Amino acid sequence: MSAHVLLVDDDPDLLRLLSMRLTAAGYRVTAVESAEAALSHLAMERPQLVLSDVQLPGKDGLALFDAIRAKHPSLPVILLTAHGTIPDAVEATSRGVYTYLTKPFNGKALLETIGQALALGSPTDHSKSASANESWREAIVSRSNVMAELLAEAKLVAGSDASVLIRGESGSGKEVLAQAIHRASPRASHPFVAVNCGAIPESLLESELFGHIKGAFTGAVANHAGLFQAANGGTLFLDEIGDMPVALQVKLLRVLQERVVRPVGASQAIPIDVRIMSATHRDLDAAMAEGEFREDLYYRLNVVSLTLPTLAERREDIPLLANHFLAKLALKYNKRVNGFAPEAIKALATAPWPGNVRQLHNVVEQVSALATTPLIPLALVQRALRVPSVEVLTFTEARLRFEREYLVDLLKLTDGSVADAARLAGRNRTEFYRLLQKHGLTPGVFRADGPVAE
Ligand SMILES: Nc1ncnc2c1ncn2[C@@H]1O[C@H](COP(=O)(O)OP(=O)(O)OP(=O)(O)O)[C@@H](O)[C@H]1O
Ligand SMILES: [Mg+2]
Image (cartoon, rainbow, N blue to C red):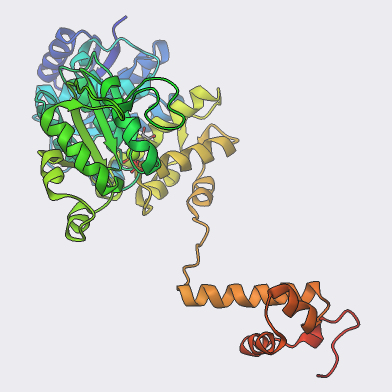
């Protein structure tokens, strides 16, 4: 079943042109010339998307949007504006409008935007006829220009076998990007294997990556194919490559140069055909300068480098991502939440997001779990955004605080007996007294029968 789009524009020529375009792209189109006509149509049938001009006789596009929002909060609305006056993206989307397009618009961009809006509005709807060629980036929800540029580059490198190094802050989407590139690549029908080089103990990483043969070391009870072999024909994603021990970096470099792996304990090398992508949130240039990362490996891995922008650098994606996560969570937990109150979206859009998209997902998960109304209110969002204030102490301050609390605990335990407390602490009495003095502690106040004068 093809998606149904409701078009609203008072310019009959444009209306006809748009109808033709969308019909040709496989959509079912209803075209009307005013907001009022759109609303009467909506009373009869709910489309999957509304595409409306802003300037309309009578009710304008924004008023139409407000009316739609009241009745169909999850129906995506795209507004068309003839004047170069695009309101600030955050402001516009904070009202809940999916996005604005400026006239004259580019036909390809229009279809892409419609495809994305539809993918968002109906996660279960697989009739993606119009955006089938975009399915590689399905998992990446975005409407920002910085991401669009990055994705265009990603699409280009996907076609080659070049090694790609993906940089970006924690939670910014490095792994989803690596997966998307794999999906867009000629290797898509082969495996995508991800390994977190920072999470596997050094002693195991070599055999994880390259495999081992039976008896190669204690515990090697059978032959074991490594991840390189598992990824053969496909892509191996080396996550947190900056955490790879230097000794293993040498071996990895050899594998990449010779295109063979030698399992631990094996005498025979096995040819492999694997495309390497890697990611790190560490500064590899600094690691190289410190001698912690090999330069020759760096140049092998970093044939193409892609950098994920932080979420704060693409705030216009926030409302979109938040609604996307909310829709998915609502489905998963079968919960009736339709969206965010406009002030709630504004609060999300302006928050600092040090944990990027992952943090946004966590916040949305928290608010949707706590929501008692279909529209998430501002208060819930504020509560979820309130990061428990982590007090950052210097090492010296932390040690002093620890010492003091430790001594207090000991004195409480021993009812203020310095002799007992000193024994438990493994110190002699003189040393222990000195410690008490340093922290201004009087043992007498801890005596069960109350403070006595020292
Ligand atoms: N553009 C996006 N659209 C939808 N979901 C996203 C997007 N970017 C990231 N995510 C989601 O956010 C979470 C974090 O993404 P991912 O694991 O790719 O980040 P990362 O950069 O690899 O983080 P880390 O450095 O912590 O490993 C995942 O659940 C991912 O699905
Ligand atoms: Mg990751």
